[in-house]
Length: 244
Ligand code: FPP
Image (tube, protein in one colour):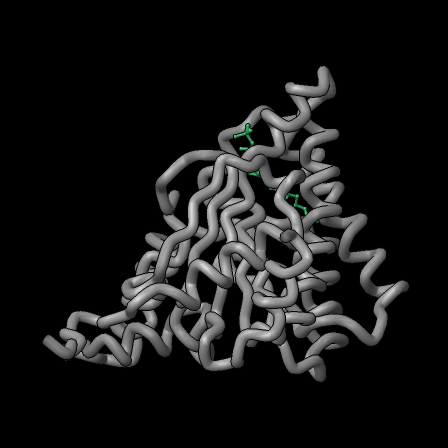
């Protein structure tokens, strides 16, 4: 049964699949707590799963995927937890620079980088540059918040001297400027909210919520989400004519 599901999702025609998937990776802390482990163990397992799922999205040939790793609000977490996530990030970026392989994606780091250490900013630049030739894009959202992103866009428009603004003007000043809108948002961990994630880009997105905690979210779950998307009827505000 599972195998059929995998085959069915992977073999869907490209136009039936989402071009851009956004993923809110929630539930690392609860995953660790259930096992009597510290929260850091949950984030570590979450980072491992991020690698697995990122690669699997290449098997699906998804054009763009965006993973929400650290929000503008996550700095409010206890200092040691923030430090732990930052050190996981450094490990990940350093590992990527030394172990990069054929199956990979073009990294883009979306969010305000000013808050990060010079070492992290340098690694972000290096990884973006070294991965620029891969066709599939992976946005890693770090110190990202949609409200911040929109304020930044308006400020840029004001600097351009704009006195009236179109939706396209705003879109071309977002971090995702050259990318398709989000078609599918997946959120793990049982909550049904967007948490300041890609608000503008998700205007017509479909939503897939699951109780699975992020470290447990598997390739089969991605298949399930993509199949769910493929069967949605998208109207973009219009109507679909039906036979009586
Ligand atoms: C949400 O789970 C998770 C985060 C805020 C951090 C996500 C970080 C990672 C997946 C690791 C990132 C590292 C790399 C290398 C990309 P939560 O802690 O809010 O879980 P809870 O709701 O169960 O407490």
